[in-house]
Image 1 (cartoon, rainbow, N blue to C red):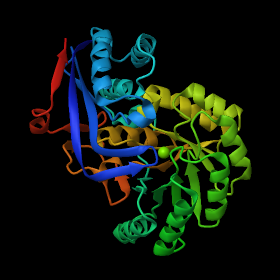
Image 2: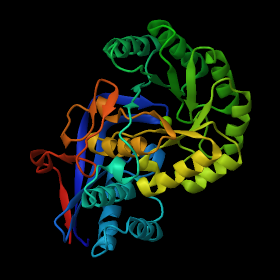
Image 3: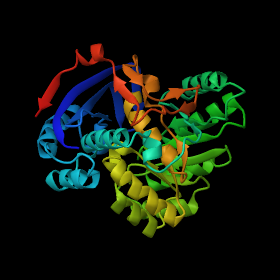
Image 4: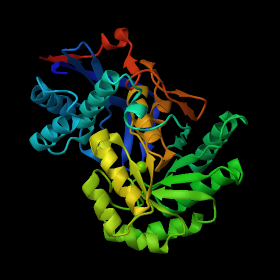
Length: 371
Ligand SMILES: [Mg+2]
């Protein structure tokens, strides 16, 4: 199955309100779409959501890189996913989010050619997935108010949920945020926390000790992503398990984190790993080391989120999902794809990822055709 044409779309989605984390504020999801055509008439779709503060890519740099990547893939056999991904990595190291859009489209094609939904193509089953809901940085009172709304949304006949709190500004406010939310929602619902590298080691120890008996499931990336020794030190002293997010992009990072015994959990995102090809390696390393994983997201629409969810479903070592990136989107241009009930994820069972974007929405997106 030969790649004959690749279309790139500048894929902007407005947010309901700006989203604030300790690294900065996002006011618009500035994403990109990749559509790969083949000589057998099949089409594969992929999405990248470049979160520049984490991956060092913007929509502009991604769209520029994607044109070179597309030229490199023209004429190649699309089912040779490893060969295609390897060619992209060798040609342009970095740009994991842009690469992940191509990887996603190649997996979409391969699963369609095999006539299997992506989770089955990856060797998995359609198992139940529950996403948490993220509450972004705000005052403790406002975060508690949103937590109450999240709790009320979950129906009694659906599985239990978790609430993820963004932290990482200052010690006093962060501790107040967690306890305000805990007080608002009662003791049952687990709280997940994410400091997005906002603390130093002493601050992290102080905060995690102060919230340790608040049914806090874990803390993502408490300190700078490069400080692996700090993570290891923190892990030994913290009552809250530690999860690597920004410290974990690829399989090499995974081996280092395992070797240093630096964290309890991994947060895998296709936008960091460069796609499913590398994410499978990360998860295999984690599983062999006894480390369980979460699958997370940036600000993808339901297309990219569906690809992440297929990957999560296909690997039982993934025990947490944080696939709520589109909850903040003011509109949903995706056709098909996963659905939320309200936090249980239902995957499509048609071949491939099972999601595309409405043609009338695409008609208004800037597009670049290669081939
Ligand atoms: Mg995170």
